[in-house]
Every structure is written in structure tokens, then in C-alpha cells.
Image 1 (cartoon, rainbow, N blue to C red):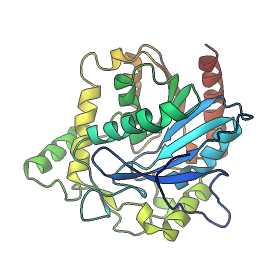
Image 2 (cartoon, one colour):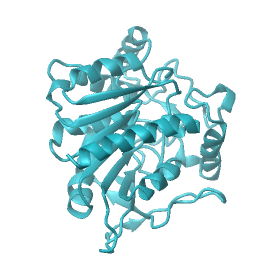
Image 3 (tube, rainbow, N blue to C red):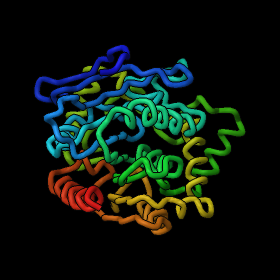
Length: 319
């Protein structure tokens, strides 16, 4: 269907890519290649309900979401998901391949715009529904500001709309910027230096099986995972959060948004998420007693996610 170079993807003996995967390296406007995976058929007998743009968080990759993609396919959606530039199997931006680096989240915005305008909107069934987790949720929300009326609705899972301890974190990020330490690891961030973090020490999920499944994927291809964030990445995130919090920004977003908010989150600040949600015209927030990665959590948390997702999407598709 698409004339791009084929891209590899990782599978385990007991964890496979959903049937029908197409995986490509797609060059962006600046030449950087992103890995884009999609599930869509041109068979007229398939009556899709629409298309899901599923976007991962910082330091994630498409393979981690095979289970979620399969659940979306069973709901009769086409699916597109890609690795953000600088992570997963997408092209890195600096010589040190293990560092999370970006100069400005506008690069992520531009990549998302390219894929919407050149791949998704012209070729995929409508309506288009976005799902974004963590950093992906932050960028997905930003896309609503630029791409008005492109999305029927959007679901954000623990979106990165603020951090805990910002009173200490933000001045430190600014200091590293002043000291030209953009490619250095963020001070105090504890990069893993390629070593696994045990389940007992993780702060993203209470589900041992799903956590260890992700570790097995990384063991098979260690390049899937970065070691830690840089000062530049942190400054880009800080700049984006300042923009989202600026007067009138969130109020401009009129699309239907559902936010799955992890009140026990140790990665992002759920209170700051609630504040942004309250400023949007058509935002609904659902609180979870889970850790950060709701879709990688125990089944009762995931069942709650899917129940709310199904109800929300059904209403908006038929509106």
C-alpha cells in the first residue's frame, strides 16, 4: 500500500505482532526516518469503525503495545502507531544513541503533522481517534490545537502535563540550559546505563507479567530502550508545559477529550493534569488508583480503561 522501506519489528515466542502488520521507515521533512507501523486493509468487505492513532510515551516503542493494538483491532478499528524520533527504532538525533534527546517538541509536532497529512488522513478510514500516553498524550493534546477538526475525539492516558517537585526540577533544567549541558544526562535523573530495573523498583506498573514482558522485548533488541533523559529533552518538555499552561491555550481546544488520570502516578503529576482538564471545554477526566502506565497495568485497571473508552467512543462516533 505504501512505497517506503520496510522496517523490522521484534516478536517473542509468546508475544507476536497482531496479524496484518505493515512496518516502514518513513522519512520526515528533514530527512529523519521514523518507524511507522500500521494495520489497515483495502478489502472492501472490512467495515472499519474508524482509525486509531496510538502514540506512546517517552522511551517506549510500538512492540510494547501489541496487546493494546490487538484489542483495538478486535474493536474493528484500523490502527497506526509510530516511534517518536530519537527513540524505539526511529532515527536517533545525537551520536550517543542511548540518550533521550530533542531540542524542541516542535519536531514531534511536525512529525505528527507529516504522518497525519501524508499517510493517515488520505489513506485511512474515518473518523480519526487519538490515543496518547504520557509524552504522547502531551503531544497529542498539542495536535488538537493545530489540527482542529482532524480528530473525532482523543483519549489521553496519564498525559505528561506536569511533574511532581517542579519547584526544584524547573530551575535545575534552566540551569543546565545556561551551562550548555544539553547533551548531558539530567542531573538527578539516575540513568539506568543499560541495566534492567527490577520489578520491585519500577514506578510505572503494578503488573509483574506485563512489566517483565517489556523487559524481554528489550533484551531481544536493547536498542529499543534509551538509558535516560538529557538536559535538552527536559528543557524541551519544560517549554511545552509552559505553552500549555499559557493563558487561553487550553481553552482553545474544543474537541472531545477523555483523560485517564493515575492518582498514584509517580512519573507525572495528576493534580496538574486535572488543572489542564478543567480549562478545556469538552474534557472529561476519569481517575484511576493505578500506577503511570494504565494500559500496562493489572487487568482490573485495564478493564476500567476499556469500559470508559468504549462508552466515550461510542457516543462520539455516533454524535
